Image 1 (cartoon, rainbow, N blue to C red):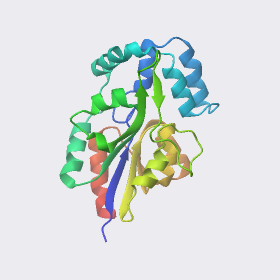
Image 2: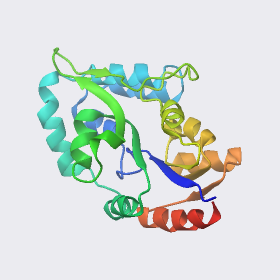
Image 3: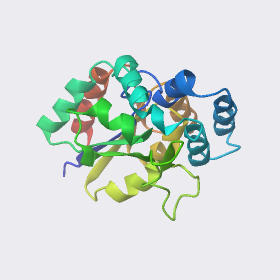
Image 4: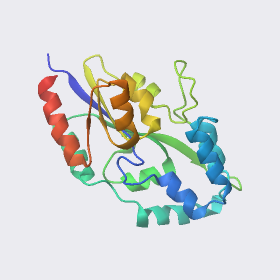
Length: 220
């Protein structure tokens, strides 16, 4: 029996060319953000703690300016619009699972991916500084403080007849890649897939992703 492809795609550095949180911090945050970034990468603090503290450095009044900045500078990876349209034509579920924040993820994907298929962190601008909220925090099987917990979301959205493919690039995609049937990877995630012996293929554009998935459909 043919299994149903179910796709879980990262946002920052995967759908977009660059990491939007890093771009925001470089443009708007005081220098303290860099130590927090280093602590996250060295796993001295969780992603959830670090990202929350980084955004707390920014005044809530900057919301509009940040969104305008990203609208002008963020670039979607080549082929993503065509890829998203192809998944709809083929009836393939595509979920965007992102450690990004709703107030910039939604605008950048507007008209391409329906909001009910986007899972990311939330935001609250009612205080003096930006507060990040965590609607998709870790479930009982994950204690990593992910913020937006991709392994938890795969467990929640997986199907008994599903062939679950993760598309990503970074350290935040490693845990969910271990649960996937197949991984399409670039950059850091590609290195980890090679080290861990996970079934995977590299990609540079989303045209590559479509080519790989058309082959996977035959295999499954």
